[in-house]
Each structure stands twice: as structure tokens, then as C-alpha cells.
Length: 450
Length: 181
Image (tube, rainbow over all chains, first blue to last red; front, side, top):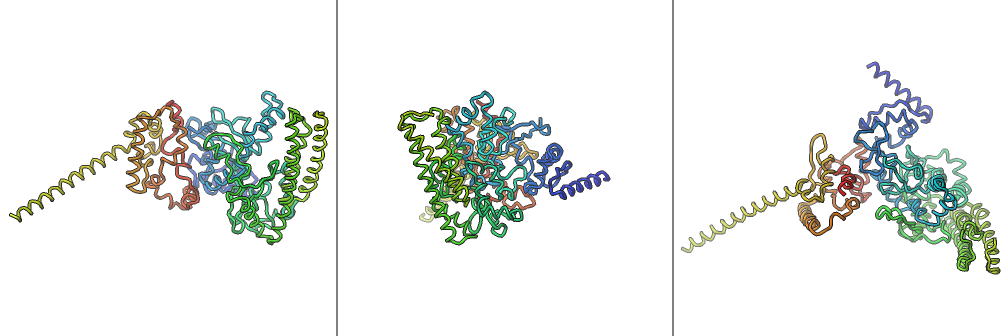
């Protein structure tokens, strides 16, 4: 009895201590009885010692509160390709676990969220780059220099960390170093499912608050080719967020996170949240009018994304549907986005903003089409190097659409003035002049030159 | 005389009705026996094709591998339980299809693992809910039962029971299918 009292006092005091230092301390001794089976509790208790960081996250999570245990997500059937018994706690028993947790597991409790996600462009992130020969040759041949064993590194340390990978496992169900760990949103799992919830809701806390903050998106939507976090910071929305966002409320219930909780939108507010009469969604394409990343911007009238559903049905790796958007069409998608704006802005404000933003996108298309025409002609006339990455004209064209052109378009549509202009159209204008002079010279001399 | 004739006619009708009832009862009894005899693992796995399914079933909780020894018969999952009519019609349809397939198809070439992806078409929610009838009344006192099935019972997903419980009824079926090749 004395032992029990001492033990519970110790547990309670260590929990109290943990609570008092803002949840940052890693619990080392943990006894859990409530809502967990004996086996599930033993995972928690042992891992509190072995990997206290993970258990610390879990006990602060909603999963922890709802009695969702380690085993509920990591427990799999023996015939699952990801099944293993590498943990000494389950070795030799009839319990099999998987390090990898696929969306198939998440959707057992969150079916709507997973289905919506599969309909969105996020779901094609890995499959798209895997399906494109040009991307694969860039990664392995040009960047990886076909070095045996080393050419895999650019994909694993770069692309996969945002895009995800087709994850391979060894016989014991353990993922290979080439394909895991990664935080990529489009991960393809050996059980045939596609997607990664932990890209935005990092494990093992799976926090809604975290995913509502720009940081969740910023780890991938940054840099020279899609500086979305930079654009946001440049915009008035980001300006307000950066000055007072730390005081806002991010924990309202799903579909009930409204102005008042915040004074300016984050990425999630406009692209996903159930603000006003809108429904919250995990399909980030539903409110998008344009494709703003392709060499030429087209309206998103393609319906739902297809890469994930095709893969799940047939196992085929496809590039998916670049014009995926709202199944009701791009005009409807824009009206949904305008409904977001209407919570804080007048109709005239919103309409005027989008009229000019759309004009900037269409202006880009004029540049994009001219540039593409020059490249097509050079290719046809044999005035392009076989190794396109050594060809000055191709490199300029690539930067024009893939870097500067995206900055110009995305900057315009999200209120990032500096990206629309100095990092955007100004550089595009310089690019096309450079490209034109190379084009003229090659056409005149009939030689590629340098 | 006339009265006697009517009387005998009446008796014949009564006798016929009784015979009819007896025959009817016999047929009903025979049908009931037949329906019963063709409902379980013994009958369903008479054909070699179903061997891996039967093995996996015998190792599963629904197949009797539980502390109480309760056994759920094949048809208690693989036939709809929404109405007797639907039950009987589906039984006749799927039963005769199986006989046909067993006779005329090349079942060795069948992609059984692939067929598992279509499990929603041959496992019926009405069947699951016949036994798991209290699930919809789950409260927060059983968080996992409550939260995990909320979207389903509020009609917000078109997933069926086996979409999320793909292994139910046949433990490690994938392994048995592989070993059967």
C-alpha cells in the first residue's frame, strides 16, 4: 500500500512538474490505466522511458485524451506488408507493429478528411514526380551524376521531404533509408494508400492548432520557385499575423474557427477553413481558380485530382490531374474564395483585388507563350543542346516559368507585391530579353554556340 | 344424395388443404434445413477454392478464435440482413454464381488478393450491425467506439464496415492466399 501511495505521489508530482514547465519536459515514468488495454498501456509506459519525446507529444495530444493508444495506429495484421516485430516488447507474440502509419489507418476515424485530401493536388505530390521521366533524369542523372549508391541522395534528402516517396520496406517491414524518413505529403505506402497527414499535423501531437498556423505550410511552400510563405509575409495578412498572431486563438472546433479568433487569415483560413457559411475541407484545391505553377496558367476545370485514386485502384503511377480544382468549375471555386474574403472585406474591395490579380496572371501567360514558342522552334530546328541543363536558352526558359513566373503569378494572387513585381514580372521581363537574344543569334547563325 | 355429394366434395377439399399444408411444411422444413446446411464454413469450403479463406477464418475472432468460442457463420457476414427477401435472393444469386464459377472459370488464375479490394461488395453492413447493434449507441464512455464511428452513423462517409476493418473475419488472409499458390 505504502509503495502504491509513494508511486502515485511520484507519478503525480512528475506530471505536475511536467505541466509546470509548459509541457516541454519529457516524462520518464508514466502509468496509464484509463481507457487503454493492458498491452496498449505497456507500450506507453515502456516508450516513456525509451522515447520520452514521443510519449510527451502523445500525452498532450487529442489522441491521448480520447484513449487512442500507440497500438491503435501502429498495430497491424501479420499479413500487412509493413508488419514487423522489431520491438522487443512484441517479439514472438501475435502482435505485429508498423513504424509507418498510412492514411488507411487515419481514415478509420477520419474518413472525410482523408477522402477530401485524396481529391486534392497534395495527393499527387510523390506520384507526379515519380511519373515524369524528365524529373527522374534530373534527380538521378544530372543531380545524382549516376553515382552508384549516391544518386539516390538528392531524392531522399530533397524532393521526398516535401513531395513524399514511394516507400519501400525490407522483409521485416522496416522502411528503407532511400525512402524513409520523410515528411512528404504525397507518400505512397506499401499497403497501397497515398498521403501523409503528419506533413501538416506533425507526429505525435497531431495538432489542429499547428496546422492552422502558416508554419505548417511554410516548411514546403517557400524558396525561389514558390515563395508562398515569403509572399504571405509580404502581404498585409502576413503583416498583421507577424505583429499579433502569437496572441490569436487557434484551438476553436473544426468549422468554427472564425474572425475574432484571428484578425487576419493564415494559409489554412483561406484554403481550408469553414469560415462563415463555407465548409471546412482538406481539399486545398476547392477554392482555386487557376493553376499557378505550370508553364502556362490554365483555369482549374479538371474536376478532382486522380493520381491517388488511380494508384489505389490500379497501382499505376501517373502524373495526376494538374487542372484539379472544384468539381463545379473554376468560376465556382473563385466565388468560394471570395466568400472567404467577404468575412472581412467589402465586395468592391474583393472584386477589384481579383480583377487586377487575374490580369497579372494573364500577362504572365503572354510571356510564357512567347518563351515556349521560342523553345519549341529551337528544338525543332535542332538548335538546342541534347543536355538541356547545359543549354543557356533552356535554363532561362526553365527559370522564367518555374521560378520567376510563379513568383509573379502567386505574388499577384496572394497580395505579395514585391514577389509580383521585383522578384516576379521584372525578372520575367529580363529573362525573355536574354532568351530572345540567344534565340535570334541561333536562328541567324544556325548554330547553338555557347 | 345431393347433400352427401357436397359433403364428400367438402371433405376432399379439406383433405387436399391438409395435404397441401403438410407438403408446404415439408418443403419449408427442407428449405430451412437446406438454408441452414449451406450457411457455414463446412458447406462453403467444400470446394478447394475457399481453402485459404477457411483457414484464415478459423484463426479469426469471428471464426471462433475467441475466449467464448462464439462462431459467426459465413452467411452472417456475406449475405445482407436488411430483409428476408433480399437475404434469400442474394443467397440464390451468389450461390448459383459460385457453382457456375467453380465449374467453368479458371479459378487458379483468379487474383484473389486483388478481389479483397472489392470487399465492400460482398460483405454487408446490415449483417455486421445485426450483431454489433449497440455500436450506434456508443457514448463518450467508450471514446473509440463513439468517435471512430461518428462519421459513419451520421451519414458523413460512404465507407462501409470493411473499408476500415479490412481484416475482419479472416486473420492474415494475405499470407494464406500466398501460401496457397
